[in-house]
Image (cartoon, rainbow, N blue to C red; front, side, top):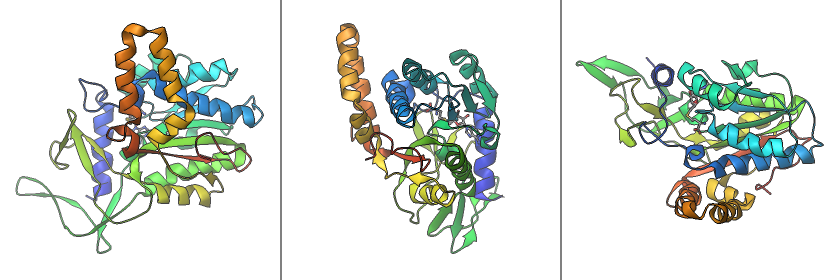
Length: 308
Ligand code: SAH
């Protein structure tokens, strides 16, 4: 099968059968580190929404919301800014949907991005695009996974070029809705600013890298996001694309350090853990530089905070 089909099959099974997040799972994501992450995103969404005239039909939407932690932190801030729109989640995993139902009572769930309602969107996708399947090519020939000598192997090696039609399609669908209806979308992931060759397929299990062809469906498979391709897909659909900013820089511009100080002052016994969490989110040796943020928005909406 193609690498794309392999990644698709492995991740469908993987996410359908477990909650992979947290210390006892396979990996930890930014919203699970601290409430500050979702709060900053909620504040940035609230700011865009208010500057666009607070359209009453706007909805909060999230792609692959994990345990629903980011959404509940962001919505606390949005509700405080008098946003009363509905919550729409795109999630295929029944296990994670259950966790989301607990965190976000009254939300609406969808199997696919195409099923989101045609409304102005306040959309977030954190570590979602990296889980979508990529195609790999060696000398323009698509790379495949074979069953050989009792195990799995790649059919060819060499300089690898990756593309992700599934990812492009996802971004294009969101961008088309933003262009027609208004709204803004934040995509946060690790990846590269410019398209270039390279094999970025990796597997993580129990917080460690693992060989990608062992234990299919039992480990998290991801690829780096090609932000140049993402921007192209969004622009082709008529949306405006911001520049790419590192997660650390973006969160600092949104005021995460001020938020951390206020949390430390109101919970002196938790000051150490707030400080550690802040550093994990913005530190250049931690997630601050590796993870990047890009926004796409309706041409009729303002440039969101932190990208000017
Ligand atoms: N955003 C969350 C979780 C990231 S893990 C966080 O930051 O904590 C990836 C998420 O995307 C999971 O919720 C997973 O179930 C979901 N997912 C993966 N592939 C998907 C697909 N094709 N369609 C919808 N959701 C998907």
